[in-house]
Length: 281
Ligand code: ZN
Image (cartoon, rainbow, N blue to C red):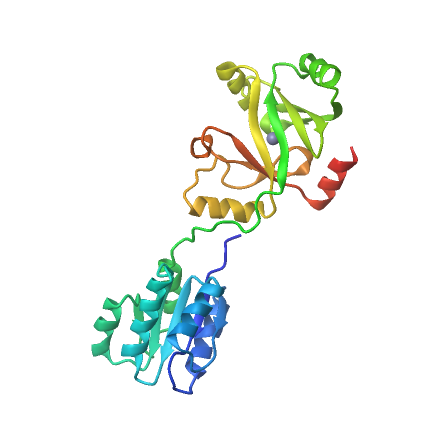
C-alpha cells in the first residue's frame, strides 16, 4: 500500500470563483490523491500554514484575479521562510503566457493554463512530488523479542530454564526461515533461541561466522508495510522489501544491519488474534 499523495488546493486573493478549483480538487481525488481545499480568498500566509498543518506534498494555487504575480511568489517566500519549500507548488487559473517564466523562476514548478487536462496535472504531481522523509509519530511499541543463535536448543535450554529460571513458552519451526525457535518469557518480552534446521538457514551462516550469541532484536510495530515504505523512501536499506511470515503468524521484516550501526533489527507486527494467542501461551 502506497502512501497517498496529499494536495492542498488553494485560492489566494480576492476573486470569488472556485468552480475551476473544485473541479481540479475532485479530479485529483478521482486520481487517488487526498485533497484539502482551503476555500475562497485565502492569504498566502493562511495557505502556507494550512499546507504545513495538513502535511501536504503539493500545493495547487488557482488564481483568476490577475494578482498571481504578487500572490504566488509570496507563497513561495513564506514556504522557504518556514523551511517547507520541499512542498511541490503548481499554479493555474487565468495566467497570461508571458507571466509564466517569471512565476517558474520564483519556484512554482509548473503553471497549467485553462486547457490543461486533469490527467496531465495528476501525472505531473505524481512525477514531481518528493518522497517524504517521515519521522514516525508512533515509535515501536516494545522489544518483541531478542533472538539468540544457538547450535542446539536442547543443549541451551538448561542454562535458560534452570540457571536463569525463565519459563519455556513453546517451540515452533519456521520452515520459511529454516529455523526452529524456542520462546522464553522474560517480563513483557521474550528471548528466542534460534536453531538452524539446515545448512542453508541464515542462522547456520551466522553460527559459522560469529558463533553462538545475540542474533537480532525484534521491535513490535503497527503498520509494518507502511513503515517499510517510509524507511525505503528515507534511504534505509531493507533486507525484506515486503513483510513475510514469521513465528506466531506475525508479519516480519529485517532491516539491513549496516545502517543500523551493526544491529540486525527485525520489525514485527502481530495480528490481533496472534498477539492474544501469543499472550495465552
Ligand atoms: Zn525474531
